[in-house]
Length: 115
Image 1 (cartoon, rainbow, N blue to C red):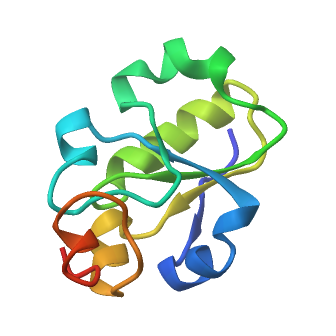
Image 2: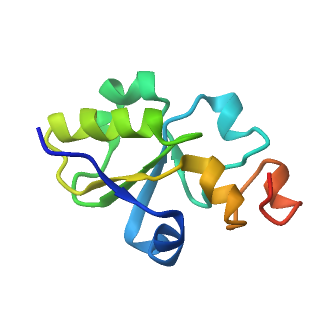
């Protein structure tokens, strides 16, 4: 299996339109205080096996969670299933919010991204 590639939050923010962002947290976290990446689709980690057919294999995928641990695991699962262009958001939504980057939903949306 390939090594999981990571992308820093600032680089990811600059290149966000190049990716389909997939948030692998649970629904309450996705809508929680950290918010989520604008345009991100929710596929909780436990649902990844069922979601495989719904995920566009032709797109670059950016996987995100709270801290980067679950999204790292999701990247490995997707790579094992044959997805080739998959990257993990280093530090997850914690790092994204710390960098004060735009979020959808959550406290960060109204608080300038400081979630």
